[in-house]
Length: 116
Length: 113
Image 1 (tube, each protein chain N blue to C red):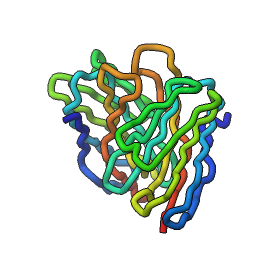
Image 2: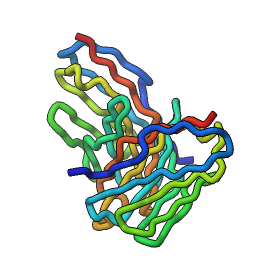
Image 3: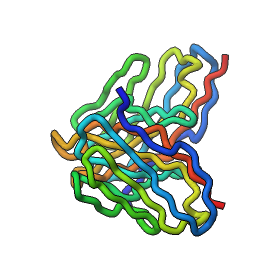
């Protein structure tokens, strides 16, 4: 089973360039999330989606945009990359069934982005 | 402020030894607490999930405990193996909100032969 797949796995950008990270899940999950992981810090939520066609801001949304046009895909875009966006990005998904927050989170393998 | 603090930051043990990792949280209200294992260069993988009414949960050689009164959790690893070398992340969810997960910074464990 593929689970949660992120592409690309590595990318180097110059300041000001744009790019899109793709997250695809094959588990028919309703909820999808984008996090960033930086040294010495816990994972921080960028944006999330509770279903196809919906998106919402997390705790660090500035400089990022997202779209969820299809249930299985969640795209994270950087319109004008900055060195502060150098990080490892993780996508996660979970089922929407059950009581809030008790569903297991499944993570992708991560996308390492470097902005020069 | 909702926070999750883990200790120690890093730990080195010899193969076959036991170890215990700590997680203290100030999240309130509280719904559940999870432990994840993250191998280097990989995404986190769930080890255990405990709700506020559970005080212990096992997954093979991994045993998590929870004391909701003192807001503390521990992850005990028995008979460590080289493959246990990884970061272990404590994650706490408040009761409200379908998106909220508060992540600790993790404990980096190194198991030596």
